[in-house]
Length: 105
Image (cartoon, rainbow, N blue to C red; front, side, top):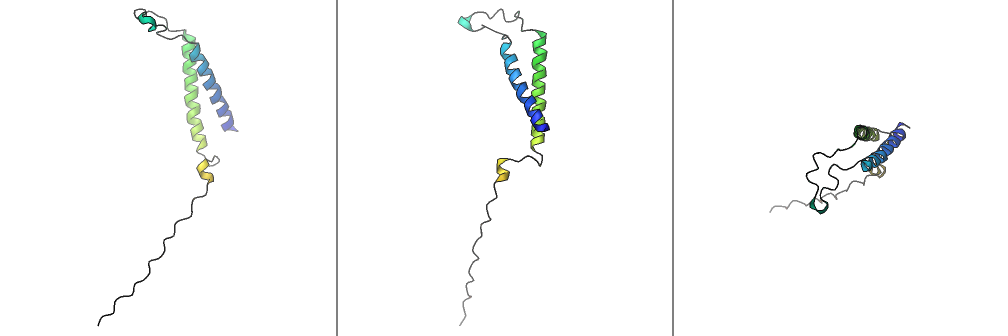
């Protein structure tokens, strides 16, 4: 139950972070277009303070849910694909045949 809730929050945080990052303007937008605009890089505003804080909050949420989902998946209730497959039987080596010792004269 808790795993599904955390997973849902994780997916929503991922989608929102993608959307928010795409909505922000680039710091050097148009910098390399036809070789111009290099001098305006220092004076270009990089976006609103709200967008920066919202992006940082989403990144923190993403990191927390990633770590928490990893911890929850290592519990005994969760299983991986490899834990469902039975291990192969051990290989049995044939016992070496006893060679009779040579009889002396």
